Image (cartoon, rainbow, N blue to C red; front, side, top):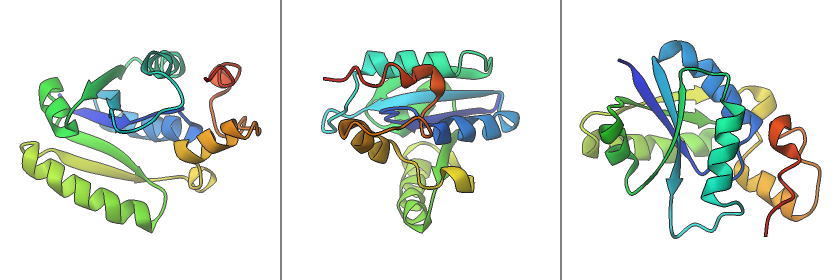
Length: 157
C-alpha cells in the first residue's frame, strides 16, 4: 500500500494545503494529513480546533486520514507504515530547506522518500504564517482559507 504523510502545523489549513492533497491523491492509496505538535512553536489555534478543521475540509476524500504526532516526522511515518512524505514547494527557499529535511528523513526514517509538488501559481504566496498575521490584523482571509472554516477563524484567543 502506498501511504504518504503530509505533515504541517495547519494553523490554519489553507486552500494551498487542500490543493496539494487533491493533486497528490491519485498517486497514493492513502494520505495522512498530520499535525506535528511542537511544544516550542506557539500556535494561534488549538490542536483540537485544527484537527476539527482538517476533518471538515477533507471529509469528502475517502483516501485522506487525519492525525497528529509529537516527535520526529520520520518516526510517525514508520508507525503509520508510510513510505512517503508529501511536501509543497512555493519557492526556491522552500526547496533549499525541504531538501535538507528530506535527506535527514530518508536516513533516520528507514528510506522514507519525499515527494515535492510545486504550488500552483495562485497559491504560491500563501502560507499559514501569513494567514495568521492577516487574521491577527483583522484582515480578510477569505481567498486563502476554505470557506467551510472561514466563520470559525475569528474565534482565537
